[in-house]
Image (tube, rainbow, N blue to C red; front, side, top):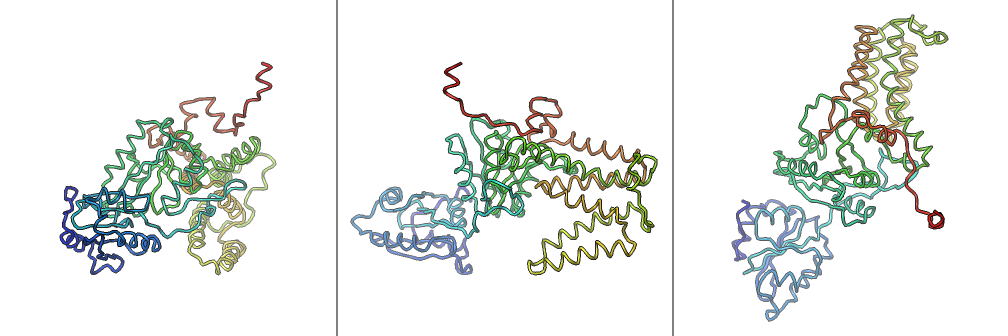
Length: 479
């Protein structure tokens, strides 16, 4: 079909196009025959994608062309008689169909060998309000939406440089989903960029049904059994712009309100915008707190289970952590049941209507709180530590990292319950191995600059350093 060209006769073009578009069956495929400069012409568009006021003005312009002023070809027509900015000429049916199904207004004129495509489309979209997940205490309150053109504009607004490149691509045999590669041409790793570009071109899927997740699975060619995230997702334009300025590549997918950042290390995943919206000392505190809490969410419950199995390991003065009540169900099963119950509550909260969210919270507090302890199913100490883990998971915005730590924690719990202290140590070693053997999309170390070790870069990753300031002319003159 890519080699098939449109004819010059309007009737043959309409016959072919009406059959291909199933115009008699699809109510939203609209076409209308008009007279333009003494010639028959036909317009095609998808109802709901075009601006009605603009189309009305264009029709008035076309119908006002006289036979004496009628141009000889499509090029002259587009140049002199189409009062609009975004105009293109195509003669390939594949390109014409893609434009039409994307919402572009198409004009066919009898005797012209090219179709005039007017990009007057508009998509239904919501406002660019702050994302629910990536909120900040201070800073910009806008966020990406499902319309890709709006998202690229939010980045352009922050990076006003000619080096910023927005490269449009497509993927999916049926969906032909729009994908934009965004990068700084003078800072990006061009070898890695070419690798990503080539992979997108050769994606063999019918549709990107899950947007970026479908694309991410096509881009990452290594094993997926390692749960630690290979990509970072963000719905914040300021975060995405900062990553672009650091030389990374971000990928925007149409119909998705978040962008995909690559390459991504564990330090990139933990970083958040709040680190930079506060002074260096506060930003450093927030970042280190996030690191420490992430480690605690992994170690808290396995360590408690180990100490309960080996009371002689409890430090002097901490004997109060011992379980005093009767243990009716083994602690390992209590932890595993609660791990599942927490996810069940999370899924229930997502699917609960807003008007019923308060009753759900009350039931969760009563049933999984006081009643579950009083009934003997769970001990209060187990409930306390699992409550800390559940709340602490929300200190960082990456769902993928939260679930990776959860899987590693469950594995450590099982190993500790079966093998005791050796299982506990083995679980920690396995977690470290999973992190150190994980690779970024660019095949670099996932834990750089920790391995290979780079002290200067590691300091920058752990501490929020002061940004370079402006030069003081007076001080420079004294020097």
